[in-house]
Length: 344
Ligand SMILES: [Zn+2]
Image 1 (cartoon, rainbow, N blue to C red):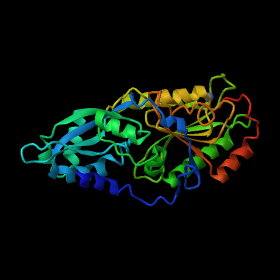
Image 2: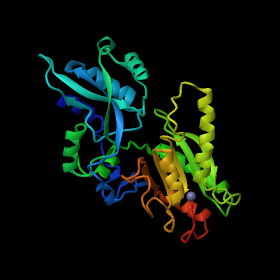
Image 3: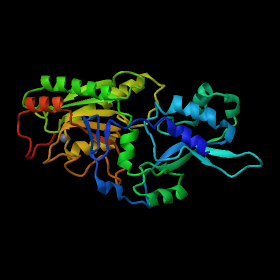
């Protein structure tokens, strides 16, 4: 069992020379927005998420690990690095049994689809035919302290405690700088073409595993001159919702979770206002990256850290782009003073 967990871990033991843990900076260009108070959440009542599990005899752990590595990890956006993949069960007769987490239920919702996916892709698939799959609720966020990790291990599922959760996230976020740089370049090109009094732009994108760039879904501008609520983020959420409804109605292989922006990536020029941040929480995006902080009204680093609050039912990752070239370029385009009472 230890072996099984260790083998899963080997792939994440990379070099961390690109990470500045103390300041939360990756590649010198992306700053993790964090708040220490977020580690003191209600440990008695964590936000839970559903995962698919199975019990297997120990000799099937190897094909399962290979399957997870190749067919789950690269695609399942809900990574739960704080949760141990395998746990030892009591011996049944002479056999040692393990229970394992296969994937999140967000990734594959239905048991039938999961069974087919396993059967098509796993080695020794005949032996997996009789393996029973079941769901379990596990804590979505990382435990803030070692004691909480121990508590949750007893109450939910074995947790691994490796230190400060924000540091763990820096290690496991799998950011590909080339993809982020490309999204930023596209964002700034759009900013240049925006109306000069409102050079505020938002891009919605989708993860594109195995490809060189993210899939850019659409670029949205701020149009509050038409109507005062048309901030670029709100325009984007409305626009993506329309587009996604249309896409889903044409393609019945897409499982409809009801959340039209779920797990999308957001790139935006300015720190969004509180209203826009709440809309992003409700839309269940997975990550936001912005360039310019708005100290008076921003809802991320400036106020409330919306998107990373244990009390809300959805969390997304928050990054600020600090690459000098892009920051200066935005400054040179957006010369309006937005320090007082401007809502991006
Ligand atoms: Zn706004």
